[in-house]
Length: 118
Image (tube, rainbow, N blue to C red):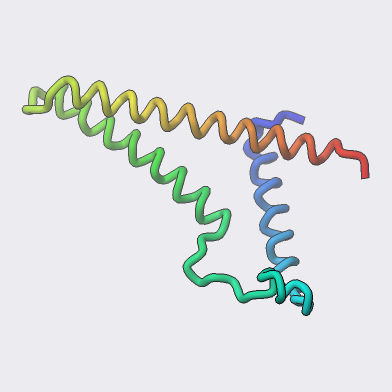
């Protein structure tokens, strides 16, 4: 199994969505859970996992697009300091590398879970 295959990533996300739907559909708080705060209603301001991932990817994409705009403006001779261009490119590169490392860790954790004996 190739962990970087986009089909594998989509399959993992599909399984996560299925588990989340099952949990939400079958949620029945017990009296003990209510006493320790587990039976409370979900906070409407809370972000779901897929929304958090989507937001993070959009932020990385925004950094890349900003870097591209700064670079293009500098190349066309506009009044953009070179330091701003270099810092923008470094921010974009760092955000991408961090996202890539997080993805690798998530896929590794998923593979470890798959290989756990039941």
